[in-house]
Image 1 (tube, one colour):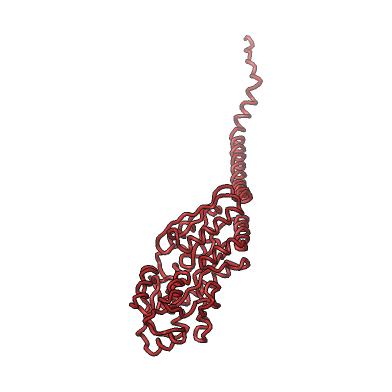
Image 2 (cartoon, rainbow, N blue to C red):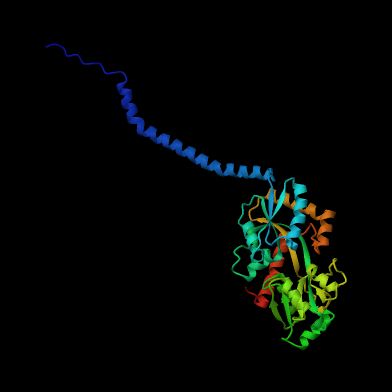
Length: 355
């Protein structure tokens, strides 16, 4: 019987079977490697993002900055913002432009800044109303002080309690005596419910233990008309607005509402000079704010530039000409805001103010 020749086994047959047998393990290893790479990439992403933020902060500012004002052009907040913008532009080396977004007592503009990216390119120059008061008196306002980064207190304007010429009083002491002799009959006006002027009137009532009716007006102009026409006895104004009527003799200044006399009109006594009003200290202030979460290098750059602006003779001259007192550059804005909010809350609760 002839010998049957067995064909030789190809040399590669056995290794292929080994490779095929090992391929699931090899695939598992590949998947593990891919997963590890993905994990490493994901871990690096926040670091890369943080580095990008640091680079952007280090290069700040690299483009124009917008300062939002929550009122139309021409008012005291707008004037303060424009005066500051000129100084900041010089110090930061980029244009600083003003965007006026009026409405809701400054709240619409403030809300835009609170909701903006925390990169230092959208800021707010706001007054006490939209920054600290509105949230306390109306549920319509959705932002809070904590939604901002406080950068600097810029300045303030005192308020002034005035009487019409027909009220028959010449001083704060006369005013107290007259109101107490006719409890509940006297009334005072302000520029609206929940404004700083309204809160000042309620603080005077509380401190002096006076019974008066508050009459809210839609702004200062109609209030001035009624006072000049002797249709209402008393009112609260921003000093710079009331001063022309006071100096012309058409209204009687009873006292300013800050702790000390104003350098703008030192001839007008501070209400706090009377024992009944020794704790009366309220005005309208202006502050530079950014959105919450502003990177520290950006915030410090803005604070430094603003401190320099506050010490500029030209800036001080323009602010004082508008009736404002420039804030000391050493004021801690966070501590100041906390103190002011606490003060406003006490007045709002006492007077049960709600809009």
